[in-house]
Image (cartoon, rainbow, N blue to C red; front, side, top):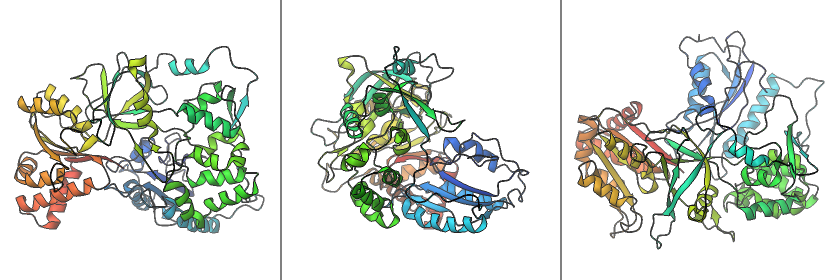
Length: 574
């Protein structure tokens, strides 16, 4: 709860900006900061106001001298700037006189046990410190284990369905006051949904185009579009059956505490079907907190015992084997614990199951080349684990299932700035490295730059086979024929030794060095974060040594300087 200052609602995205600004004369005695890192080591959107405030140069070094604090970072070590925001915030709070109860905790999504591997021992030490400094008042008791907190909302079921369809009204809504947003997305008609990999290729990749006429949407190269998907109808039916819910029953949502807003994505009143289809992420892999709450709600002794085992710190290896490794979903877990699932009070649904998160896709087209259109390149996620049912990406599978040829299809979407920004000067070259679907933002950039007469466009593209997954081949070759683009390709499976984009960078070292060091080029990288970014960075430092005559440390410093100057930018995903 926020009583004053910047002690705000805490969550994975960091501090929200909903509280009035902290001032040195009103300092909280104890603050726990929870923050994530996005993009190129940037704070999340809901933390940016706080970030600008806390780094004001006129804050005196004794601003926080009466405050104890601790920082919990949520990050992913596959990214170069792992937990950068948490580390920087910790240092800044110390600069302002704050007293750190503990070193910053750096949760890592890449750990096989997830962020909890670091968070568990850190939380144990934190509570020891906090309770020693701030004992619980004698008149307050500690909530015993196994007793759930009250639900955040209550669901008041209606005896009959409303006469007007509240869901259709909610989706259509009135004319939004500004550009489309998460609270008021634009229902974009899908124009085409075309597979662009050959039928024999192992992966289904789609080029999807939307009509954004009259939307008020505008975007530039490097921006992203956000789409909130829906659950499969079969999963909705199965969920309602396991929990004993009537999908056609309507309810109104009431917060238990004043001032708590209802989710903007849900209409009032709302049907159970709409709640499960559009809001509850029943296809996600549940976190440990899901098992903790489910154990509290379970009336079945054997199931409760197993749920408690999964939620205990010593049960994390078993939980990982049961849930995370095979990517078992919320719905599948509920089916495995039917007595517990059937007894879950409806009031706890929004506490138990997280909301469906919007998925971000790099925009693959420019408004200058395709007015009133927005295109994305989508790799449909589909893979097998030891579970019988294949694992499917919720958003990519949902998008792939939509067929505008069979009738009108509308997808709610909105746009936000991405992490890639391109130079506006006409003679500044750009080097773009985009293997696979990582090439999507560079198609938008090339289209935009060509339309503006900007020259010096160098693209490194890599895929497996020229005739199976060479996205936009004819478009690239036509631009190259016109002198608007210089294209370098790496088809990894067409020779005995695999060739990737990093190999092409090394081969073309003299050109890369010439562009970066003498012509002030910008370097861009997009694609899978697993190993490619590190390989590309290593290839670049090798080029700096061989062509620039730099030592190993100097080459690393050169690359770091390019990053600081925003002349090296990357957009990668796990």
